[in-house]
Image (cartoon, rainbow, N blue to C red; front, side, top):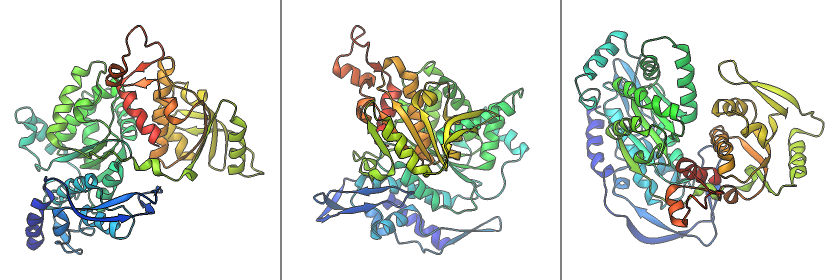
Length: 467
């Protein structure tokens, strides 16, 4: 065990390398790249030139034995392989990932740093075993009133990973998560799913003096390491909850790994009562290493078109119906159905059969529905046929937000979308711009009648277009 820790100490400087990119001058031509994370397949042009990237951490990546183990409180923890760095290297060698992405390699170095810290401090982090006792929780709460949050706990910092859409953030976080021991108290969850869970628990603890403290303790007792995908804040209620929730969460010693399209300082930018949200940003930056992936390649746009169908034109609904009938089977009857959502709510499905559901856009995005309804939908159906997606603008901003959420939930649940729309994905969001984009194109109060200036939606649209 000491030898393992010693080797970890040796590998850490390599993983913390921050030098400039180094190339060995060789080049390859790749015809095909398959990412084995879930179901995504990517194709590259025959004429794309790829350069091999050399990083000091590669030299040290095989220093630790693949069959190491750790004993904590009498419990043996088997360490999977050598952590995310070696698994990433293995996938490249097997042709499952493309070699040469310097931005991803820098990110995997940060994830390896965190992996090493967690392995070395598994007992102090309470990654193995039961949650916190009431007495210990009260003690930590009392100390937190007088001591800075960084002065107690294991001292292990989490990771906040942000960058453009389709750059591999989720794939890398999942790779990191899957390499951690199975008996650790860890959880991987989508942000929408987390907030639904939090709201459900708050309802359950209604009447308690500080329900957020109770909810934070429940969450940290279940999982001391939380891997949170697609961190985003668009709702004032969530913004107000997050500050207090994560303050208690971190007080309990929890560690956060998160992915996002937004830098911490840009979260909930321009939102209502944002001043009450700013302390959370400071806490997030204090408890996590903030790392930008920095890549400009959107690999999702290279995805095989066979995953779904997108029909452009107002009069293409007959094609959608034909495709829907083909999927459910010639003799299957598509009937109205009802699916359970959360807290006793139900969602009415106009037509459904054999795992496929059919909706008109206004039935799913013009009504007061949200992530909970969409999660309920995709837990019961693997394919959604959506008729009549409109061009978005100032007049239907709420529907645009719901559509973005729908696509996020569909992607998280690996669902398939068949749809008809008034324009291409880019055209649908052409009138949705960020404040910076509005300034660049000269949008003023007098000429913005057809333009929706919204920072959160302006960033989120890129994610939807990519998917």
